Amino acid sequence: MKIIKNKTIVEDDWHVLRLDEQDTAENITVATGKIIAPLRVWQAQRDSLQQRSDLGVWLGSAERPEELKDDLQKFAVIAVDFPRFADGRGYSIAYNLRVHLGYTGELRAIGDVLRDQLFYMQRVGFDAFAPRPDRDIEDALKGFADFSDVYQISYNQKLPLFRRVQRKGRTATG
Image 1 (cartoon, one colour):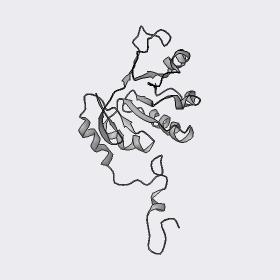
Image 2 (tube, rainbow, N blue to C red; image 1 turned 180 degrees about the horizontal axis):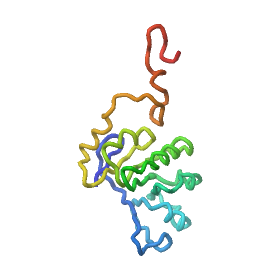
Image 3 (cartoon, rainbow, N blue to C red; image 1 turned 45 degrees about the horizontal axis):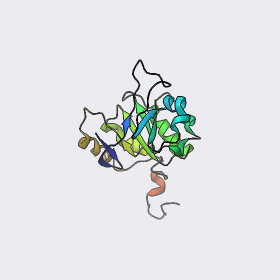
Image 4 (cartoon, rainbow, N blue to C red; image 1 turned 90 degrees about the vertical axis):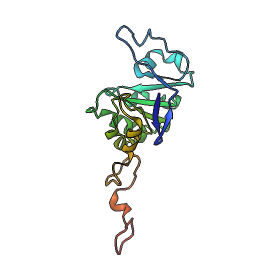
């Protein structure tokens, strides 16, 4: 499978673990290799999983990133699941992970990820994206160039437009 990472299409060597109806967070076996496990699996099996360097975790849109605040640096990747296009809670989760909790590792968007979202997702801190498999990843990559500039501040733009534009008789910061 391929993903977009730092605006480049790359091969993905991580596997996202999803629970089936008969699975529970306590009884699911987390295979060896690079696995991104659900938050509830991490919470249920933390003692046996915390020594792994090849483990990531993913949060559902109803889960709170603060639940990971003491464990953030244990994960090479944290993913946020978008269950459907219209569910925007993942944007807040990403922003909170980056800005309020200081997470510096890979932050990946998974689930119902479409081209139309990528520009906005990067603004809140995502740097890796797993677009829906039924969509063209090359086309999705073009989503980063949908807009030439932004007015507001965000994770990836610390100054508003009026602070970045040079006006006659003024400096960009004055």
